[in-house]
Amino acid sequence: MKKWAIILSSILLTGFLAGCGSDSASGDEAEPLSEEKLLIGVTAGPHEQIVEKVKEVAAEDGLELELKVFTDYVLPNTSLAEGDLDVNSYQHEPFLNQFNEDHNTDLVKVGKTILNPMAVYSDEFGSIEDLPNGAKIGLPNDPTNGSRALFILEEAGLIKLIEDKRETATIYDLEENPKEFEFIELDAAQIPKQLSELDAAAINTNFALEAGLNPKEDSILLESSNSPYVNYLVVRAENENDPVLEKLRNAYQSEEVKKFIEEEFQGSVLPSWEE
Image 1: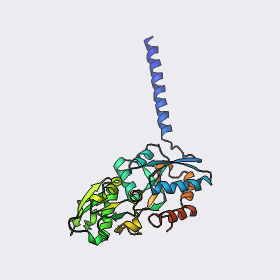
Image 2: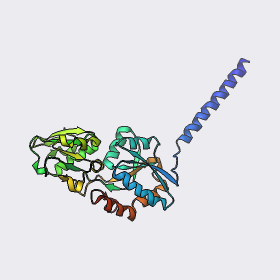
Image 3: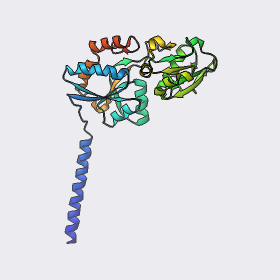
Image 4: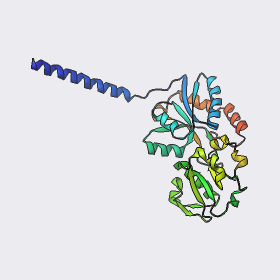
């Protein structure tokens, strides 16, 4: 009797382990994206507005887009990595690379979208040259946009960054700060609300537009048009070659969407897919 019990236990254990192996193997297979509907994450503001237009164009090709709108820069990527989104549209490559490194994720870019030129604004001063010694300047507190803001200030000749730190520069990587500016790091979404308490601040375009600020007309310093901070459509690596993404790219990079961007934003947001 004891012998049969041992044999039975062995059979059950073998079956359990085989079942576990089967589940694991199936879990390694990439889940293809739907060819008829995609859930796309966007940040509020220009990205949301533009993808609403993309949605109209995509529908003509039989692709339905459902938007999920976020008000921060982290959740659209964590939601995508966790499978709660199919794709997102809101970020440039330096931010994506830093996110993947920090969170051990494997998200990839699959198509250019727009450039949101970052700009510096001031309620008190009419030009960047008017900023006094010791001026308080607000910067986004996320690493990539903070570096981007410092790079813009360096291009304008206001500061000098340590050469080998330029791409990942923080406020502690200044080689020269002749006017002894005081840099204050703040949540990017909150900077427009605190602009009146600062001498100047670098603000991302989507948050600037939400606050009624036009980068082209209201800023005292505008990011140059040859910026490397172009935005992309982003997916999980396993879905990089899904055929449905071609439909999405074609809809986004269409003449209809380009015309909408140019008319709606009047140069404060730029189509970036044409070389």
